[in-house]
Image (cartoon, rainbow, N blue to C red; front, side, top):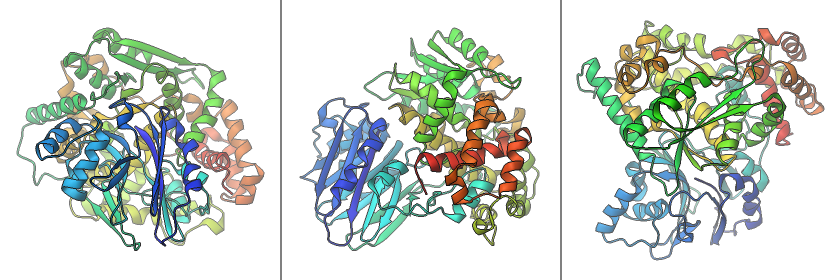
Length: 593
């Protein structure tokens, strides 16, 4: 896991090396173990390294293979790199390191851009063909690793984080009105390629972009699950359970590939508990597990230690229970916002940031349970979709997932920021209207798995863990697991209140008390309720001179939310006041005017 950045010139001028090197401090937390820089012709590359595979200097980046005429910076992990290395060795390639980075170089030389179809893992990389001055950018299937881009006159810059591009300079920091509409309506999700800033875009997941020396650019989408039963064999409920568990066993085992120890973030829910159980089943002993809890607020509990402790005792893990007192909370809010590449409203961000800080002091790689709810229908907005006609799916989805409808938004945003069309509903309609996805529920799960998941929980985990040089791996987002879940009949996923096929498959592997517990979330009461010091923080941000000058929101709407924060609930348990405050806090933290 690392941080990457670079510049590719399209006008014959040399790259601005000084600008590219200004990215390095912003990428340092993603790679605390070293840095590298390289420049040749129209390209400059920088890299910050977190040593996970091949801890020697032979695995350092940027990695240049003069014989093959290729240079590379890479963030992520190719879990099947050893198998690919053996295949490439048999084909006549020789290796100077034992790193997965070098495997990408040789794989590209042998298979071209189709090499990504052979990679099992999470990755974002920039590869340069030295002879042709061609730049290849690629991102993994589920967008687990980020890649941001900023185009300017005669050049393209790219980096693992948006703040790194800001540090390089010369970025259009005007807000994107369509992205703002998505942020306010589509549960704060800004789908790719947009970001909240007009001058920064992100490479979509499962995409390879090839940019040639004359500036021509082509995108190839190399993976997209169908979310229907057309290619799925007829199977009984028991057979679906067996297939799912077999795929998860493989996914968990793949994510143990490392030259350092691997632990687990154990929330006490079914998803992370199952990861612990499967690792124990595969013979892992003394597994390091980590749980976090906060002080209660407004009568709401701030921890789920009962369940994580139960799992730790049951499987004999080396468990670490991390309690966060009130005095650490507000400073952590500031730090978490500074670590965000984009505004992310989930209160989980602060929890993950604090948890990652503690975990990184003991270990550098963890597995985590993100993704199960999105691919296996675990959230409460999925059951209402079950009996909706396919033709009515868009409106039904908007009713349960949108924070604000377009008509209401006119009373919340200042007039100059309002669009004359419902961009968010149009986006959902286009996604739902694409081929595939047999039922309304299939369409909702496809959208959530391929868009919402990427730009909410997945991005959140990457940003918060990498703020502390901690690599997080997510077995539920193994692409084979996602493909299997997409083909699974909706009724099996909706059973038992959601994730029924997973709950049934976990019987006898995970204690029943964990399987049958009510669904929980990272409990951060102070953010859910926006009370006490958090309310003061939000009020200060929304009333700051920068906020007044920007003029995003109608003052009367802000005053209403500040007066009654308890009545500002949005979809999925979030808070509209925190949503507004978080956006302003993020813009002010990154000095965006």
